[in-house]
Length: 393
Ligand code: HEM
Image (cartoon, rainbow, N blue to C red; front, side, top):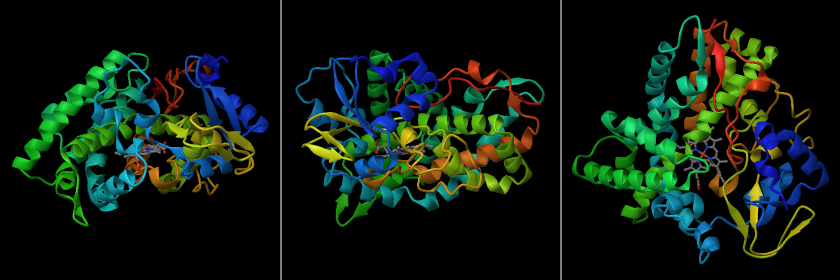
């Protein structure tokens, strides 16, 4: 079985493939690795929503891969995060983190996000060509999460490098080395926060208690790394994809420009239209599972595609067209169910502030290359641009 999810056409534009698959079977058997392994890909909206909450689909990656030698040396804190656990372990971790990672904490961060966006936009030329991926979409999320966690400013460029290395698609050794470096760094930082408490999220996580429960040292390191990693490339892709959608759809752009307050209500539609996460994180069937009309055998990977589900025509009318007036709140870009994105309020705040400032500062912003020449990241899990060249006037 060839791997259609790795073809250059798919990486450039996955939607025709998703549409074809969904029309045939919203839960389809596909090759999931280098051709030797197969699993099931969920592209229908109703099926994806059901899959996200089906307790027979486990996120316990370690159990699935136990005994399968991979030759990898990923640090356990990175390999086994909250996102790779099932209840009751997940329930306990999630409850503790949710107590620290509150909407209030995000609201308090807004002035810092505004300041950071302003600083990044200041560095772009007033009248020339710029790349909005390297100039805005990449540095913003990592700078903000470092501040939220309480990573000292002097260490942020190093943390940014490790964080980037963790996404080095096709370079497992680089990823493994970065996982050890960043886990070691977070362990030291936790120790430092214990000695000198501050108002950071990391310190809140150290002290958080719920019904006599507390996070262990390993859990703290793992959560710190998860927060750093989970919100990084996803938010980068969101900002890039959203700016591109606006620049390619004049009606949408006009709406956003004439009333910047509308950007807030457009965010869900932008997330639905070109979802930053193409395929959600790994799940597998612990027993034979019927999903939609498809019988999934026990012990196989099940890949849920938020990007495909969000373009399901049985859920959204004319899904391939972004529509500022659409109520897109039910989209699955942040997942669904118990693992639904913890950082959604932060990602939304960053995108809203970045888009509003960008469109206000550069009223003549336009694409600097034909859309067909844009380069997309070479990963099937994420949907995001490698660069977004624009003219600022
Ligand atoms: C637009 C940006 C983002 C998108 C599209 C996104 C998407 C997602 C999705 C689809 C999931 C569920 C994965 C699954 O069930 O397989 C998820 C989980 C998660 N996200 Fe996000 N995310 C974004 C930003 C962030 C940010 C900024 C943070 C934190 C700083 C974050 C932290 C997390 C965490 C901790 C989880 C795991 C939750 C759990 O296991 O209970 N995300 N995200």
